[in-house]
Amino acid sequence: MDADDSGEVGGSQPSPPRCDPSLDAPHDDLSQEAPPPPLVPARPGEFAPLDYRRFQVDPPVVLAPMAGVTNQAYRRLCRRFGAGLYVSEMIIARGLVEGHAKTRQLAAFHPEESPRSLQLYGSDPRYLGEATRLLVGEGAVDHLDLNFGCPVRKVTSQGGGAAIPIKPRLMAKLVGAVVQAAGAVPVTVKVRLGIDDDHLSYLSSGRVAREEGCVAIGLHARTAAQLYDGQARWPAIGELKSATPGIQVLGNGDIYDAGDALTMMRETRCDGVIVGRGCLGRPWLFRELADAFAGRQPAPAPDLGGVVDVLLRHAALLIELFGERSAILELRKWCGWYLKGFRNSGPVRNDLFRASSLAEVEAIVGKLDRTLAYPIGAIRARRCKKSGTQKVALPPGYLDSLDDDVAPACAAALDATLSPTDGG
Image (cartoon, rainbow, N blue to C red):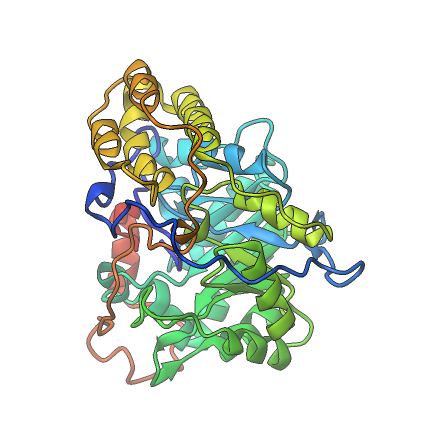
């Protein structure tokens, strides 16, 4: 529901695809684009691990929390390709406190997951604090991230998500409630540049995060008005790093390969990177990142046969989590992302979108030419998010007083009904 988030908060059942992959940007034959420039791997000692007090993140790479995407199955799949921090889907604090079964299931981790990283969403300090005490008291988490970047109209129009940081005292109240309740569990926040170019808040957000005791702040270098349009403004990440000593800064936006990650860190001096849409259908990106940060040239992307093997491994993990019928429905959106750009994959992709069993999936992908090289153009191809900008919807009079420390009543009411299907 944040910068790179998409999907459904539900819990026990996976979300339907938010868009039909067959209707996304053209898939077929993206192999003719020019290869990226040669990568210069990290030099010994060039980049330090992230320090989250209780543990370190090495390499300094974080999987962005993405609702409907970073469920337990996908986190486990990505983790098998390389070390890093793998954050859960967004969890609504109020739903957790009120004992919603689906929310509780969504917040669960597989025994092999460590550290256990969870993103919380809320606009009421009471529910955020209670949810934090619940999670920490049960020993259920090793890290908490707070979502202050959702740009979706339903959320911002009620004063939630990306609307919150423009009011630093309100943000401080929410962050402080979680940090105080978390005790030794590290807390981070994730924000955008601001509402729009006339209402930027990332520098004040950095001060709030530092003063309230967060270990890091993640910045998606776009405004809420930009949504996912245009290039992320990496210089703002460097500005935030310079302006807020004493807190780690993580950069987010337009990281599609290992070269992007190293370039962002070298240009901005940020402490780590957050990877979102760039890994959709490309979980091996975390292997490439691990290689580059370790000073090695990254292994090449898999050929189509390797991609199919990963797709089927993903299917198995989804079946373990959801059961076969629901897992195959969930897999549909992933098939479009995995096969994006491969020549003549359209008919197979459309067949996969109608599959209802693992046996059908295996039979369909068996028709593919496993020897095809990975299409270079697919690395940066758009995945599901539509282009365009927006005028950010806000509650009436919301900007009249930026010194408020209480969220509008409508924001608290929204928390009671919010589902990650509302995320963007």
